[in-house]
Length: 271
Image 1: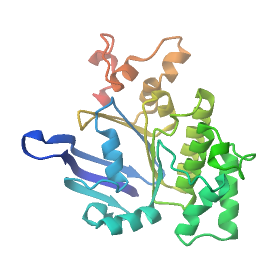
Image 2 (image 1 turned 30 degrees about the vertical axis):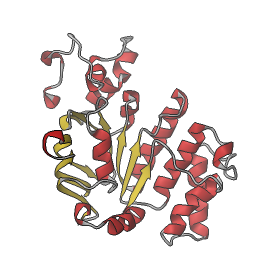
Image 3 (image 1 turned 180 degrees about the horizontal axis):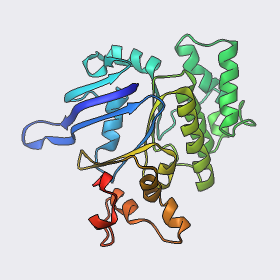
Image 4 (image 1 turned 45 degrees about the vertical axis):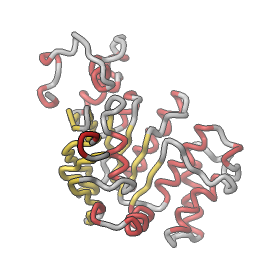
């Protein structure tokens, strides 16, 4: 079942001669229980696309459907209510409430949605424990490291069981080991809870935990990768196992090009 669908979405900033097209006629869909990475170089439009999928920006053209509703047709007030119920979002800047503990920050989403009860509190606790914060439940944000704060934000994005979960660079403040642990757990929870998940990331190593990769360049979708071996190669997993440096595919996805990345070396499925 489709959890999220975008049809011919365009976002234009400004008008006339100064108009800038940040996203240009993008269509994509994510099934429930599917975790997708949105990648591309800076300025590719991926962050703007994510903001529109989250209902934070309104498309200039096109439609975005979540839970069967076109969020682009909603008023600002309607989108705000809709986000609280149907969308979970982990921002790059975690936006935690400074005077609440880690547990209370996660519980806040339940309270805002009228879902807070004893079972909800226990679920919040279990989620934080699973994300490695068993000893930090009662700490406030200023008592947590940047990585710990980000894990609280991820728990908060998942706790109210939204239809769609969106993450903007969720590993930006994490060390390598913790980044792998967090994204792997994130992927497991999306699959277990049957949510549609999208992660914007510059760290292609994290793509090994997703089901599909969508690459954007110059505001458009340039490539989709669904084959498992192709995804692992993009993430550098296969190359690292074979003693090779950063894969040429990873270089392309980050806006770089290599003479070794010729068409004959790539799977026909992704040309």
